[in-house]
Amino acid sequence: MADVLHHLEDVAPIVSEMVRVVRPRGTILVADFTDQGFACVAAVHRAEGHEHRRSAVTVDEARAALARAGWELRGETTGQLHRVTWFGRG
Image 1 (cartoon, rainbow, N blue to C red):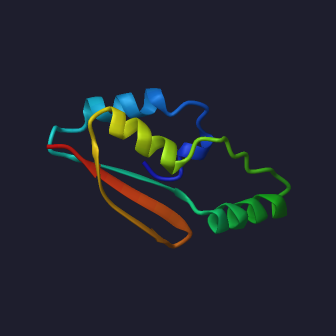
Image 2 (image 1 turned 180 degrees about the vertical axis):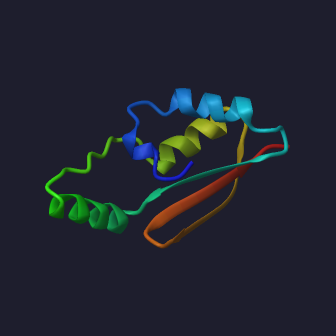
């Protein structure tokens, strides 16, 4: 899931669905913009006469929801204006 979290009001239903459809030994990847990335996207939208809305849902919130669902953080990196985390189980 990339660049989706900031469009959500509640991460729980999305995490539940990801957990449901990913194989037991599969990987869940969650990525969203860094603060610098959000500033860049907002500037582009402003230049086009629009606003890029951003909810309060974050990678940390998704990380906590996945942990509650039994998924373990396997890695995390930041680059290309994104924070990327991936999770596994088993």
